Image 1 (cartoon, rainbow, N blue to C red):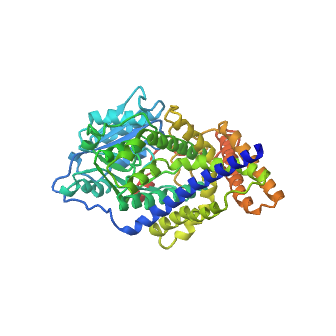
Image 2 (image 1 turned 30 degrees about the vertical axis):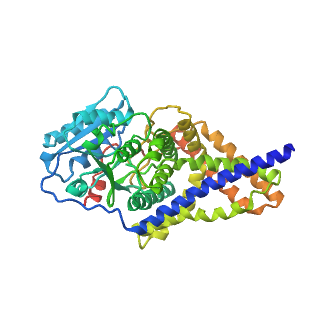
Image 3 (image 1 turned 180 degrees about the vertical axis):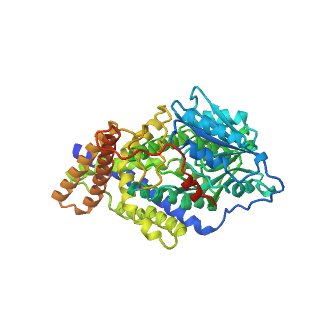
Length: 509
C-alpha cells in the first residue's frame, strides 16, 4: 500500500512539472504567432515643439563605464535648451570622482548636466530615480543604465511617440536593446540570442496582441505625468524589478505602453558567468516579487481574459526554473522504482519547440542573411538556462516567501573587443557556496542517467545529460572564474577605466 502511495505521488508530481513546462511552451508559441498580427504599431505625432526631457543615469560603483555613458548622453542630438542630464550617483568608490570630473567637463561645454550624489543608497535604483524626479525639470524622463551607449538620434526618434492627440495616453516608450560585445565569447553570444528573443519576439508580440508588457529599466522614456499619477504611485522600492512593477501599475491605471523595435540602444552583455548569474537572480526574484504584489490586480483588470493570462505568464516566467528542478528531482525515484508517467503527457513534449522557434524567428528578423549562424548558439543557451535553475529557483522561493535582500548590481567591465578583459577588475565576482549545490545536482543527474541506462530507459538519458551538462557548465565555469577573480590564475590586462571613443563613433547614427 505504501509503495502504491509513493507511485501515485511521483506520477502526479511529474504531471505537475510536465504540464507547467508545457504551458510555458505554449505561451512562447503564442507570443511568436502574435507577430503575424501586424497590429500594435505606434505612429509618432507631429513635432511642433520639442518637450523638455530629463535624462537620468543611475550609477553605483561603475568606474569602467561611467565616463562612456555620460559622454554618450551629453552628445545626444536634442535641442540644448530642452535637455537636462542627471547623473544619479550612489557610488562609494572612485566612480564618484570620475563622475564629478566628467560632469564638470560637460558643464563647461554648456550642457545642463548635474551630479546628484546620495550618501545613503536608500531604495536602491528606485530610490535614486525618485530622488532625481523630485529635482527634474523634464516632462519626459529618459533612463539609461551605466552599461548603455545610446545613439545620438535616440531622443529625436523616441520623443515623437509621446506627441499628438493619439499618443496622449502613452505612459512609456521602450526601445530594443542592442549589444556592444555580443561576439566577445560563447557566453555573450548566447546571452545576445536570449535578449534578442525577448525584445524582437516577446515584446513585439505582446504589443501586437495588445497585451501588457514591461519597461526593461533602461533605453526607454517615461512620461512624467504617468509616474506621478496618483493611481500609479511613482517608483516603489519594494521589489528588485522596480521597472517591471511601475510599468504594470501604469498599465493597470490606463496608461498605454509603446515598444519600438526599430530603435536600438546597445549595451554591454555581462562577460563573466557569475555576473550573468547575479543578474538573472535579481531579475527572477524581482519578477516574482512583482507577481506576488500585482497578480490580484492583474486578474481583476478590465482587460480581455487572454491579456490577463498573458500578463500573469509574463510576471511568472521564472517559475519555469522550480519546475525544471522538480522534474530533475523526481526523475531518479521514477527510474529507480520503474514508475512510468501518465502516457498522454508524452505528447506535451511537442510544445518544447516553442523556445527554439522563438529564437530562430528573432534572428531571422534581425539578421536575414546570417541568422542561422547566430541561432546555432542555442545549445549553449539551453545549457545555461538549465544550469541556472538552482540559483533562479532560490530567487523564486525567496520572493514567494517574502524574503527581502539587497539590490546587487551586475558588474560592468567595459569589455567591447577580444583584447579587453574583466579578470583584472575590482568588480570581478568570486564563486559563492551555491556551486556546491550545482555540483551535487550534477552528480545527481549523472546517477539518474546511469540508473536509466541500467533500467533500459534510454529515452530519459538525453534529458538527464542536458541537466548534467548545464550544471557542469555553470558550476565548472563559475569556479574557474572565481579562481581568476581571486588572482589564483594569471590574468590578462584589466578592462580600461576610461571611455571608448571608438565605440561611441561606431554607434553614432
